[in-house]
Image (cartoon, rainbow, N blue to C red):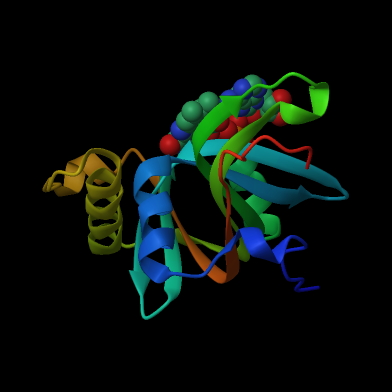
Length: 166
Ligand SMILES: Cc1cc2nc3c(=O)[nH]c(=O)nc-3n(C[C@H](O)[C@H](O)[C@H](O)COP(=O)(O)OP(=O)(O)OC[C@H]3O[C@@H](n4cnc5c(N)ncnc54)[C@H](O)[C@@H]3O)c2cc1C
C-alpha cells in the first residue's frame, strides 16, 4: 500500500534536493522478500533520474543469497540516507539526529547483456566517485548487475531542531 509521509512538514519534494541526497548518500539498503522473511543488504549504487523516474544500478558477485532471492521474487524496497548529524540537549528528548533520506519500492532486473552492464557500471562509478570510466567486455564478465526500477519513492529531511522536545 502506498502511504504518504506521516510528518509531512519533513517531506522533501524539490527534485534538485532529492538529487542532492542521491548524490551524497552512496549506500542503499535493499530490502527483499525471502519466502516469508525479510532480507536487507547494504550496497553501493549508481542512479539515473529521468523526468522524475528513479533507477538504481547495483553490482556484485555472480552468486549469493540476494541473487537467489531476486530470481524468485524481484520486488524490493530501498532506503538511502545521508547528512547524519547527531545533536544533543539538556533532556533526553532533546537528543536526536538530523538526516536526509529517500525510500521507495520497486522491481529488480538482472542485466544480462554486456552493453547494458557496461552502461550500468559507468553510471555506478559516476555516482560513487564523480568520474567517467570505460569498461571492456572482460571487465563485466565477473560481476552481476542489478537494475532497480523504483516505481514510487518519497524523500524526507529532519533538520537539526531548535531547542524543543519533538
Ligand atoms: C557499506 C557497504 C557497501 C557494500 N556495497 C556492496 C556492493 O556494492 N555490492 C555488493 O555486492 N555487496 C556490497 N556490500 C556487501 C553486501 O552487504 C553483501 O555482503 C554482499 O552483497 C553479499 O550479499 P549476499 O546476499 O549474496 O550474501 P551471502 O554471502 O550469500 O549471504 C549469506 C549470509 O551471510 C550474511 N551476510 C551477508 N552479507 C553480510 C554483511 N554485509 N554483513 C553481515 N552478514 C552478512 C547474512 O546472514 C546472509 O544470510 C556492501 C556492504 C557494506 C556494509
